[in-house]
Image (cartoon, rainbow, N blue to C red; front, side):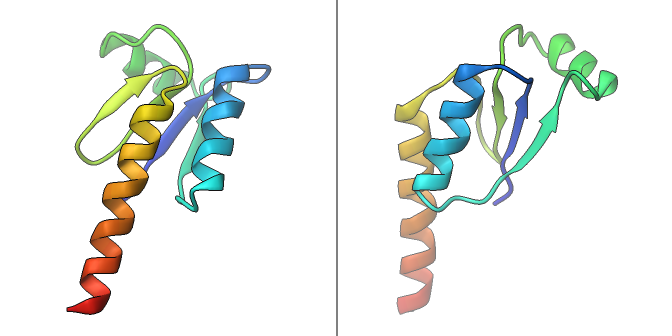
Length: 86
């Protein structure tokens, strides 16, 4: 389940989001919207106005959202663990 975190330099919420995913062992890709104009336009067209923006297979949000990060990690871990036992 790929996750993309759209970030920008000097963004405390971006750093906190990446650290939270790191602590929970969740892999992700990052895109710096200050160097990727197309990504920035796409996010703005979708209504996002603040960084970070997190896109998963079935959800998206902006800002540092520890509740959503934990929920994603819990669901991802449960899926992997359940699959390993089957």
